[in-house]
Amino acid sequence: MAWVRLDDPFPTHRKVRHLSDQAFRLYVSALCWCNANLSDGQIPERELKFVSDVRAPKRYASELVSVGLWEETDSGWCVHDYLEYQPSAEKIREGREAKRARQERWLEGKRDRTRSRGDASQDVSGDVSEDAAPIPSQSHSQNNFSSQSSIPPYPARERDDNQTDGQDFSAVDAMVKRELAALAAHPITDQQAAHIRDHILSRARSTVKNPARYVQRALRANPHEHLPKPEPLPGAHRGVGRMCPTHPYMEEPCRACAADRLAAD
Image (cartoon, rainbow, N blue to C red; front, side, top):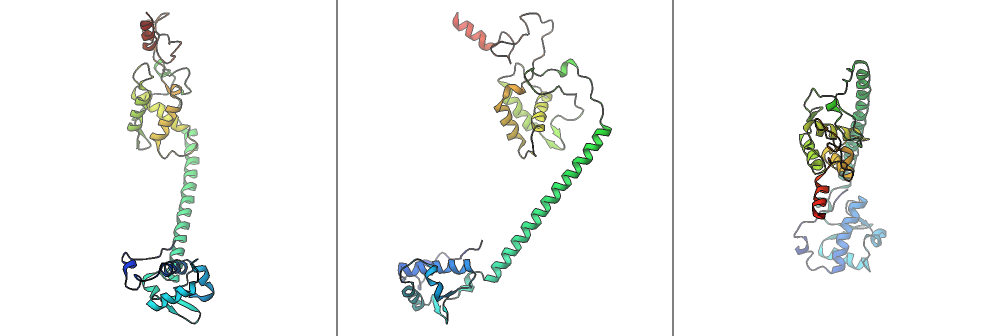
């Protein structure tokens, strides 16, 4: 998009200061019309009525000519020194062509990146299916997520839980702990937070540009789905280590129900 250029002291210029309001409006409207129509400041007489909606535009055109802002031509008028202050039609066309070329290069680059990701995904899938190591058997400590959760037990990690494909998710994992701290029966471990984060991101249908915001929204939408299940206490028996029927994410008796009973007594 091209822009009309007017310097700050334009309204107080000696040629402009004594113009009538209608002539001032016609002049500014003419600058916009010439720029939009790439006329290089030329205003044909037959087009004058389309330049501005002022009444009797020829009268105010004559006023502009009298102060030297417009000049009369064989076909109508031209804006005085238009090309000294406004871009020429040729320059505007060159700018538009350059912008179009930049957009084409950007779109082509985007298509190339999309194709490259698709090829890489196919190669990785083939390598994983042939060379993937067997999943270790699930131990008791691996089955520590709630039965209401859709998160599967996870194998022990040999890499940093906060690092995935070179990305540092330590801030995201810390946010997971904060979001679920009030609901969890026990403090959430780093490994549990990393697994919750991985599970939420793995369900995304497209590339997640802001993992922290995406994970936070998922946790707030359904926090109980992602709560870890506390491990049963050693030597637990009936009445100990069971989950509260009112608050199934807390051990019985939970603090909330205990407080209610004390208040009732």
